[in-house]
Length: 506
Image (cartoon, rainbow, N blue to C red; front, side, top):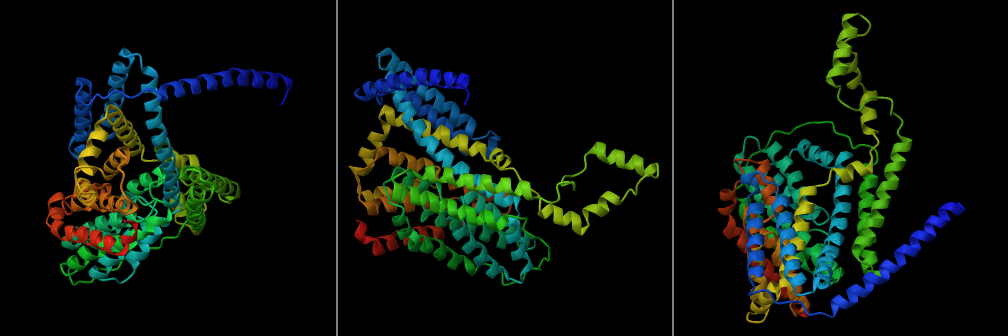
């Protein structure tokens, strides 16, 4: 570093360190103040109305075509504006700022964790990992009943490492392709996949937003989540066993396709597993938050993408569709007799071109750009808004009602039922914000019920909402509702099994 840049460096440090000291003093002073109870204040009532209206718009996204992140981020911003107005009037602005930063820190950890997971999923999709699985299933001579169980079991285990929406859409594409002539098979299989995806995510610390929130909060250790494996299996298999007899006894027509995984696909799967191990190790052995391990895991993918870019041997062969201008140029050259008009098409069907497609490099930052930003911003709105309501005092009131005046088992079962109407991530965040004084077994119970309770209704989870859009007119809210009593059987069964095998935690 040259003396000139050293001068700038130390000048920046000299400016930065005092600002850290001042910020630390402000945080210490703010932390000594008691928050105001605004639950009976007009400001608190207004914030409740804002949150309710915003969430109503988020739940009716399919009807209004208004992205769910827009009303939630607006409501979260306004809630903290109204809180800040009251605190500024009382001369307590520092405390409001500290509380907002606390909510923002919780979201930042969740955002980075999900960002890494989604980036890996997008990379695997780019390499044809999911498409390869779909084609493999389509090429086998499975019956409808066999495919019903195969897609359900795969959804159960895939959702333990992927989010339930991605899992459901992957299995949904297989179901729709195989059941074109059997709408009943599509309907029942979609219901089965929703149940399986939600159940599979409930026993894994990184399988669902609920377990991820609980793990990051530290109320349940990493290894203890797997105590919910057997209850999750019961939750999935009981309804599936009943629906099995309603599946047509027919054989779908097998589809033969040639689909090869692009170069690096298997390595990316390995790196994703290694990233999950890294996150678990950071939390268990180093005492660092799991998100720190996930960010280290992202560098695995970044360096591997660099390797793929540098070792790609077919960069001179086009890997994109021809634009209108390029096609017009080809036509003109063909008219002039300079080239064979069909040469580009011949090249695209050639083994060399297909080999080049399998060897296409990819840029990891493109995968970050393709994240589901609407979902990420929606969770920002939810977490920051719930943080505001908690700061007002409403979470303490709810906690007193649920976990002081009511048996915690009953409260946790009701939380699961509520997750069929309200996003399970929001429900779990509210419970964590309440911070009830309950046993480890009860924390595991609410993790289970909040995770699988969304299966009771089609709109209770992202998996159900996604499949309703994918299988429009075949898998609907009403068709799912007809099987709700059977799904409830699995819900009750999973709770009973949890008490039987995990009694030592209560």
